[in-house]
Length: 478
Image (cartoon, rainbow, N blue to C red; front, side):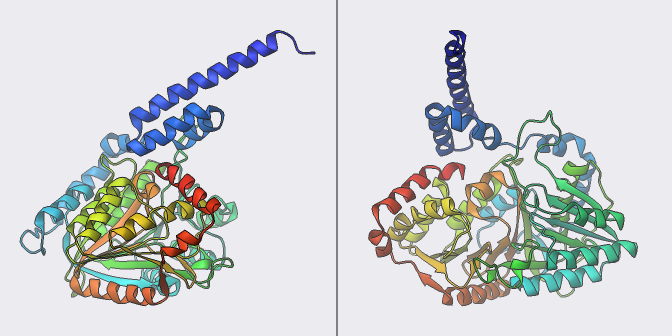
């Protein structure tokens, strides 16, 4: 039997949820980094508070609390090392090509200048990447830093584990950092075997205690291996068998890594060190005296980015890269959900007559993101930009080619998550020979792709077009 108190209670709960929805909408308006994100959250919080409130509390935060404080106070040792590093970086003023102001802007975003005397080698697909990483691990004398977003306990994961265990038992210090969410299926026995062999193991968790505010929307998406402070490996590959033979659903896995030697390696391991300090509150002793690469003459900058930055680092870099291009801009990404700033810069590049191409996978592993991506095709096409869909497996590489002398390889996608939510890292190389190698690699990829025909959108049924536009409304929070 329902008492008179129950309807009153239900009404009070409904009013409370509605009020919390309004309060949270105001919070989103005040704290969201983009107006589009603020609008998207505010609308859904007011209209569907029962659904939106838990989503906002778990996924709506735009700042990574605690990491900033660790940078500014708790990890003074890390900052001391960063200051020491700056003294060893050569002065490259007057030696860099083209627009010095644009280069200066990127250096300020990275909090580090370009360095010379580096070597950079493309690692195309999983076989070449993991052979190079394993060779580097085998040659380690003092320490190995390993950081991946996803680690699987499959064949390639066990091969990595076996090598790390062997080096740890031989007296090499090994530090293993994995993202708690990305590697949520990684077995405890895998980690226990590493620890038992003497490997220092930690997860990167967004929330550090039960009393900490929820921050599970933030992921550490970096993929890093550093050997003795002399060589570093960065790129799109995670640790999983799909990188070698193909995915059972998507087929061959197309991805790219880069191996660097020289002073720029210090930037990669400094990024690892900050993440390690957040996770463990310890600072391992690493080599921070830059060593020039033998016969290396490439100019390289390491660009870490993430939600603890003062600016939207990677987003601003992409905008700067697009605006700085004078002839050509080729962008490759598995996910493409750009914000209004990137879209405006891309349209201007197309209208300026640049050769602008965007290569995306033909098959996506995220339906909502894939639907939202379609909504950008027509406005880009009107500006003269060509869209290509890679048809031979799953395209997972994150590569940008700018004109004839700048190329980037990294972990960041062209979406809001990489622009504002994920911890990412990008290697920027100023070198004509390296850019030519990237050009050849991408030309081969374009030959395995098909230019998207806008008439295909016209032929799609109404419900598909409606789904595209609905997904586009959620783009700011994807």
